[in-house]
Image: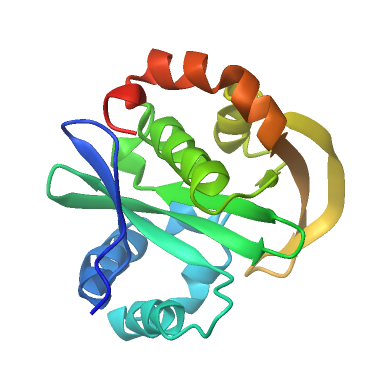
Length: 199
């Protein structure tokens, strides 16, 4: 059996490759925070039971090579508080996208920023990518602060980028970071976040 992929962050936080045993905890967050999460995540409305979450996790685990998606559960101590993913992995062009969400109760504590940093480092160091991208709803200011804080370049706005569960489209701000840019600033970012102690 392959070992679980774990990205340590600090004494409280770590990322662990998603497991089917995470399904009840993930569904509980989704089911109790539908209004908050559903504003920007269209999958929330389609997630009606923990079995739907289980099916999603199983689809990730059952991927054939080449893998196009890696999903991590975000753990604070022993509690699952959100997910962060490496999406649309394109090894041919050495690029991918990062997506994330976190429980409303865990906002504004730097958890997502630190998690994104750990995943960026994993993408450039382990997956040997050249480009990572983050797309956020243009009005989702909290989410947009993450790539902006980490020095991503705003490339533009993708109009009507995502169809939401209520039938309207949202525009996405598209941010990117290149390997050479990461090499120029990773020492400062990892040191300031405290991640150099673990990565």
